[in-house]
Image 1 (cartoon, helix red, strand yellow):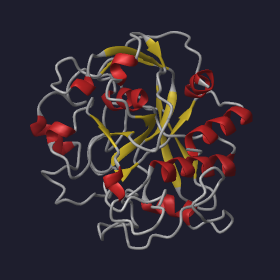
Image 2 (image 1 turned 45 degrees about the horizontal axis):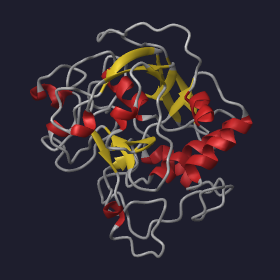
Image 3 (image 1 turned 180 degrees about the vertical axis):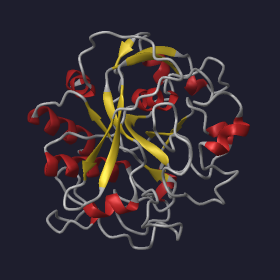
Length: 316
């Protein structure tokens, strides 16, 4: 199974060069969301290597720093919005239910889980479970034939850093954070429209703050110890519903929780007010800060590999 994951994560390593902090990746493309005129802007992320984690961190789950190699991939320039996700959510051609080992769409919310922070007009979709985020990717594949997924932890941090080696992708001064992120100091405890702050050097918006972003990895506190120095495309496949890795911090977090190497994880408390039995696998009543963005490997896996991947990640 590890071989399948590596194949999906993804392109055979050909040559690696360190990517410098101010390198701009201008190559972009727009993909059309099925059944709509809406589009998702994707940014080309180059192959390269970087130092994942930080030896200067005071948190043991963020060290030791390890050199990691990443194959090239495409990543959404922005977090997925309510408008974009709603095309999937309202697709009458896709069955609606709690089953996640087939292509289904989320059940209806029993209350408005945007909590009046905004929906239409470019606000990030929120209160997302990792299953709902991954099922959106699977729905995209079903309707386009192109494989999408969530990023690994390593891919997320690599893309967020955009070649930088500092606490934030713009440097070490948290006083500058307001130019790039919606967080506790400026958000008024609400998420904001995507893409309204400055992007990082690779053209990615809201990598820090706004909504926290799911990765496809199981969270392990000693994950950086498990990674081999120089490892190519590391990933930690899921073994349980909790805890799962989520990155970037949110509009509710302090600046210290928005560092590029900050690692957080999900827990059952994020869904404690859900009255349903069993609790929803789609929505998080108390995880109103959780959202996602998508990635696409440069080299597409085979149909068989794709089905094995979605079975692994949605069959738990």
